[in-house]
Image 1 (cartoon, rainbow, N blue to C red):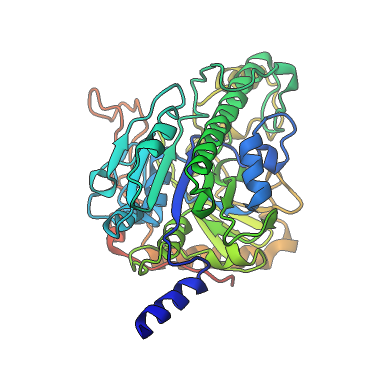
Image 2: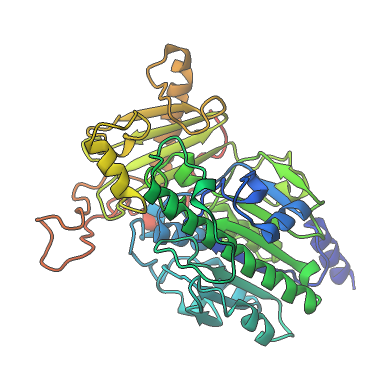
Length: 468
């Protein structure tokens, strides 16, 4: 009897009763952090996500570890930095021996499902059910999966949309947007083709929202909504130039909303820093499981109870091979964002939507400095931005003497993280897609992964958490 009482008391300290909470984890594909109504976008309609935000908690400083689909998802599911997963580059599979938090849940009795875009590899033993999804955004089987779940088990659902990844597909589940209403960021060219592509992007975000609304309806119908943690986030930034793959906020920052009425008061907003590797440790804790030492992230459960709480003062991110060779590292601390580029002689571009119109404007000499960023060669070896004063990170202050001490601190943070987590610059880095040095027919010419030479796959150090 004493043991039962003690166990019940322990459960109550983390904010829920003896009944195990459920989890529904929504992850969009290429969704920029600004592009939801909850984050102030005046055009894109996302009423269901907005409602979850209004009734839950919105994070304003949630950062990904990389702005590239598969390594981002591998990092989230393992709670490890990309160079520590063994899958640091696009189109690489997470090694089977790496920790995967849905597997921990499954082994503890949860019914675990993934539906839609996986792009992770080696996940068969982590889920009871794996679905490729249905429909243009891979969301159409989400509600049927909930309907058919075993009712005697708590559940974890990883619902991964392919919205809003190009090529954009239009259907009747979301509004059709007018090109004249599109908001063009200052680092892109305002042209007819770009505006047209943005309307497709807007449409797919609204479709993602529509299916989230359908899932919420089903959770309420089953009377499990109140006991279900709902998380909404993205794997990387918009599928446009100077966003996806890049380490500016346009690429590396994610919208992040958590809804759970048993713990979270309505309408809370937190400015506290979190990293996408923190998702794994948080869900493991909330499920009442023992922490796994292989997970490098830290739990942000204290923030869910108090939006002013701090669990980390610094976050880190990577830019590795994504079709083209790259090795950048980012540190975000306080109001500042620092980027170190170890391949400054390489152009930092990702040929996504709208590129052709941008390239033509560049050829005609019509671009300003911000718009021509993706064509720079060489690139700056270091960049420092005061994010509070420079929302889009357009003014590099690395040579400004006013920020000399901050630059020094950022360099040291990166040096400590590099050493503690076993990061390195490969001696034989992966080749550009289409490189004449690649083997015939080799679409993804991967070579040495960052962290391979240092055995980073087996390093569990969390890296710096506190600011210098």
